[in-house]
Length: 478
Image 1 (cartoon, rainbow, N blue to C red):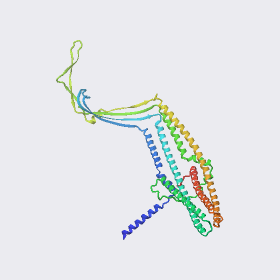
Image 2: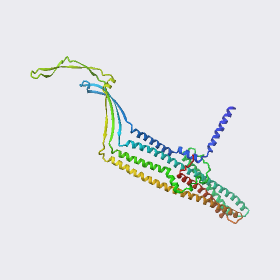
Image 3: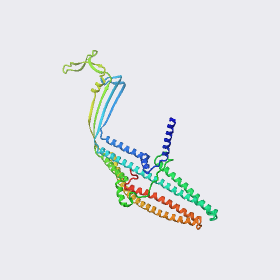
Image 4: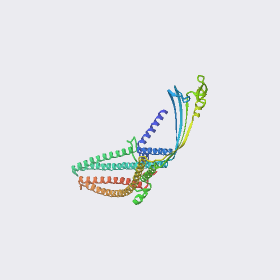
């Protein structure tokens, strides 16, 4: 019994968690945060930041000395000169050599310093690019989120209109049976119900597609049960429309990422010019090298008199022509000295400085300088263009937000008028003073007015969000 109770409890808990997971509805803040953490484009931009950090390590490494070691072991087989006796012999000899070299840039036209400064600027630019990508994703998520809310409300409007028409159809059947209205009016209303049913299906499909679009933007695998919370109100919380376009533009220049990226790219272009000019200057490098060798062949351990040829004539005495004799000796060979003894005895060192002065290099340095100057001019133009684009976008966004607000307010007024007209038409139709065609027209105009209110509502919300974004107000408040 206890085992069954435990299994039942686990099943109930898991079933409850499953139902809760399926019924979870996402807020705008949750959608934006999830997208920022999981979006593929953002992840790629984060890798660019890591690459910039690696480039900085390489720039720092230019200031450090270079150290390289080498070692070799060789076998010489055949007729070779013995380095100890100087004789040519057919034998196999072995040699080991080792060495190390150290080099360091003492002066390189400030290229290393400017390369490090450029690497630091590249890290800043990569961070700005990441922030821009996050902002773009947040805007896209907000737009997709509001599109779902619009499709939800539009579906409700169409469903309510369908329900009204279905009730009207039932009422018309009673009137036809009572002989109050002709059967043709009933057929008109039946056609209207069928048309409304198609509109509901289209609105439901649009809602499903908008949910799918946002789920894909969030990189969600289980998008079938994806849904969002509908709690958005039409209001200018930050009273952004009370600001002037010029004030919003001035505020945007302080924090807009596009301008920061353009300014950083300009600074990077300036460093590229300085690096290219550094190649005109002399370079001074310091170096130190160490080497030694070990031979495994026999060595001359001493000498002994040559018994077979004890003496040899090396000259004569002038005047008497008496021969001058010299005792001949033969080398006494011994085993090679121990490895470390030879390594210490044969070691050698060298150090110094090397000065290189560029005189003529086929105009390569000059061309690099000119090329970097052209890139600098492009960066200046890009910064100016970015500033002009920002000014145009701010003024356009402000005008669009104003227009969206006016359109929404006008749509509300139009809806109120259409509602009154529909109520009046309903009364006339009920007493037979209006035919079904005119009544259906009144219903259609009312439905269109309701849809227009919904459309202008979310259009206004999104354009207010864009305007707030330019003013420095984030899409979501943490």
